[in-house]
Length: 272
Image 1: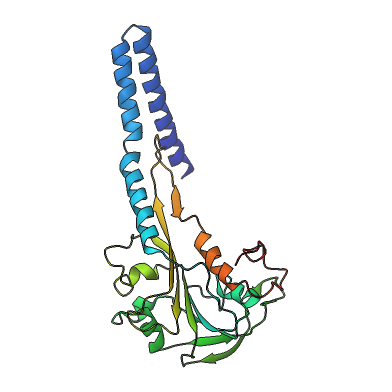
Image 2: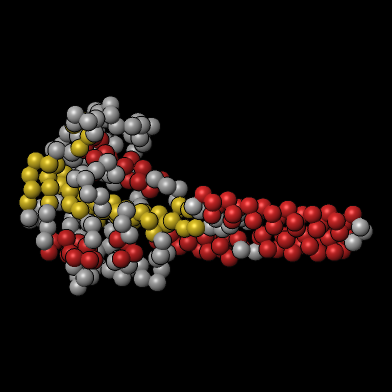
């Protein structure tokens, strides 16, 4: 692989050098028009691939902004909340673990959303797919404890196969669930195909077609820079990575932070 990169980058650098030399030779011999023509072609070749990529990126940014909405804050204090998360860790630090430290919740439940469309291909509404064979964990309303290896995990105190009565459902997804269930969420033909993170809040347990009271989407896309090297990767996120996650976390700031392990967050900064 190292040799392949050396050949690719070396060849590209040689090509750039030869073009530069050709321009300088043409100018030195008085062929200004020829030199300028070579320069114009080089600029066009360098810039043009980035032009459609730029407009595509702008379209994705505008699309995800049009599909995202949320109130200034949501009062979760004293409420029963179920967290639907794509991670395999019960009540991970994405949102659920944060809420245990800060949310002042009455009760907290957690369930996973991994591979829903694979296991239930005939069910159009993701929450109906979860309800088909639910595995619900109630978690202790205290800050997750640190284990012998220095990791912190929420403490599941009970497991049930029945959906609990909840005030809110919070979806925190990192597995493209908004794309897989675009029709169900009413996003068909509108949703950018590269939504990477989705946060939604519903009142109660969502029934088919129920609209969320908050929906924050983050799109991931590739944008070509001008004069790009032949091998490169430039992924961009809009909004910036973790901005929406931190916005959702900030809604759970009614209780003080009581775990020094947890890093600085919107609550510590005076978030709402």
